[in-house]
Amino acid sequence: MLEGIPTFNVVGTANSGEQAYTLASQLQPHVILMDIRMPGMGGLEATRKIMERLPDTKIIAVTACDDQTYLERLFEIGAKGFLTKGAPPEELISAINKVIKNEYYLSPEHSHRLALNHLKSAPECPFSTLSSRELEVCLMIAQGHKAQELSDLFCVSPKTINTYRYRAFEKLAIDSDVKLTHLAIKHGLIEVQS
Image 1 (cartoon, helix red, strand yellow):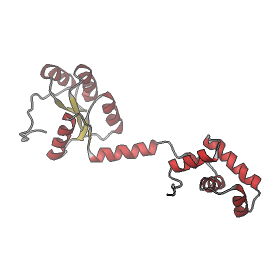
Image 2 (cartoon, helix red, strand yellow):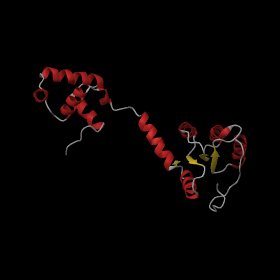
Image 3 (tube, one colour):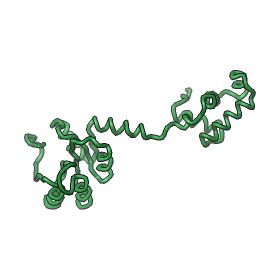
Image 4 (tube, one colour):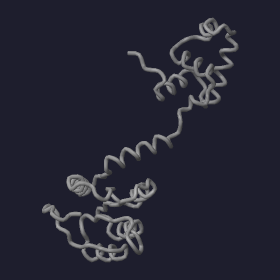
């Protein structure tokens, strides 16, 4: 991968996870480009062992596979970067320069995919547990409307409005209109007026 790039000095090449570990222990390189799907121990285990022995070495995982589990696991065990095989030389140089500065590098396609996966697994907005009417009532209360105004608007008694309010409080695990307002602002359901 680094052939023809004069900025870097290749000090060794390994054909298996065991060989990568042995060479890293002997040569103590600043940066390792680790193939995740190499024979033997494999790149994941080799990365873990190298990081235990040489914690200052920066490892960039290079792989043809697109498995999100590998990506997250590699960062957990200490890898600093993640590239796909066939990445353009400029991207490889950029990745190496970043990890040398003790920063993380993730290819644009992987960072996008990782962000999407985390958004999908992020806890949903607590307001999604409310019924439509509870949500309407809560948002109007959070905007400063009083129960009497809402009862006139929805053609129900103030007691019914308060029933919606307290059911919502229970579902949202809050106990006041102020906390309701803060929660609505936090989740972007209402804006703070200047």
